[in-house]
Image (cartoon, rainbow, N blue to C red; front, side, top):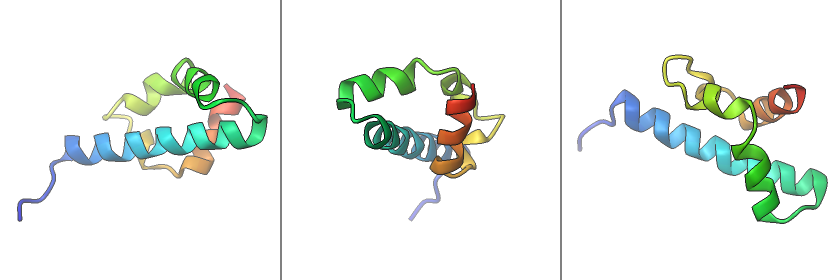
Length: 71
């Protein structure tokens, strides 16, 4: 079995973090999934999270959620 490359790992972890962020927003605010997704995908955190060189995607979703709320 071939090992995943850096890009594949970054994509997987970023997608996982995004899904968890959406869940956190829904739980904390009681909003719909659509509203939660809009908040997460329009946040200032998204570009930094998607930057593979910054490796922010390796942080826990809970930490990322706190960071997103501070920005």
